[in-house]
Image (tube, rainbow, N blue to C red; front, side):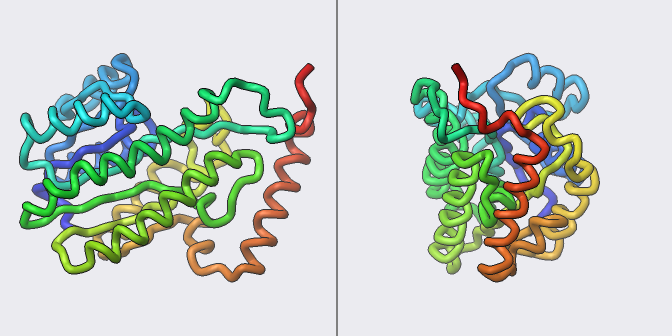
Length: 258
């Protein structure tokens, strides 16, 4: 992938993986636009990295996505890289899924509707560029689902499948299509403190940008890298062992609410 002299749009770019990507793209000589739902987090990001361009946007909302596309292409028509990074993760006991549907649908809207719709919006714009790229952040759980996060795992499997189709359909164009498959990374995804066991964020970002520099189309790290070419038997065993480990460490997960 061409790593410099781009204008990069990153969803979910105010914190975590998105902000770490933004920092690295800035260091490589790119203009970077980050969007997120929380104005205060965007302001914190801009205080740390004044070169950032920020915009409030809820990618779960169709109207917000359309407005974002219009705003970016009018004000920064040179944009040529979209990083579909925004996502949320919710633990769900399917035997006790008693919340309103909006709670569960929100995860689908952010993780699936957002990246697919934004890709469709920006694709005609990118087709006019000398060079462009889509970077879709899925998850190692797109291959071996985390049973305790069933909706999240399903949404990331959808993005994995969509990215494969997108890459084949764009193979004759000068548009790179890259899938990034994080393992558990030490961020606040899913809630503060839930992923402190995960890979250190700087190590993860180093590996991802090394993969981008080497023109890799699917980039994992640690366990998620190993899963990319795992057999079905290995995947089935991995799902079972991870689920058993989770239940052992979280014995109240399957307790029904009263």
